[in-house]
Image (cartoon, rainbow, N blue to C red):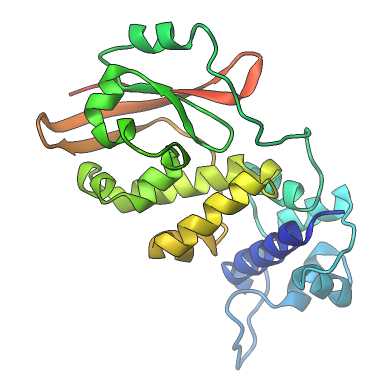
Length: 261
């Protein structure tokens, strides 16, 4: 049975996705005097083939079990993409694997790999998105990383809580939204871990943007993209942002920013 926190997240996610759809998008004709934004609960229940009472309980965060078939129906009705489908399944307690936020050690090859990637800024990232190690190019790109307290050496914290990041990254809002959406998707399996709970609570108390966007339950997978920086010494820098999952270490990420300008 999912924890209370997961049931609350599940309820909020369903309400958010229901509100984002119009009747026309699911083949319904909107009637007059429609006040509900998006779809009504009874419309989602009807299209998914479940009772209105049962679906209402689900949106209220009650402790009920959800079958794979019902999850598939809800995902179809709410027009979820593959990342959102996995997120829905995780919240409902359908885990692909057992996960926790256990500390990940930097492998022996880590420092050598990071050094070899210079002059491309690169770093190793753990399951809660903590910076575990980085190369000289990364330290030059973002010097505050080297002086942060250990509990603040986290990509999401750096993105939302440090004013230096907002000055450095061009198009900060778009990049921050992408980071939050990917973080939410990738840490759903460890959503109840104290390290994740504490990080989210600190961020919601520190960043108004994080607090607002977290409630929207946007999730997304990683995709290669260009990142633009306004560096105080080097001027405009453009990197191709790449991320790799380390073989045998599914919770360890190697992130590389390849210079293109």
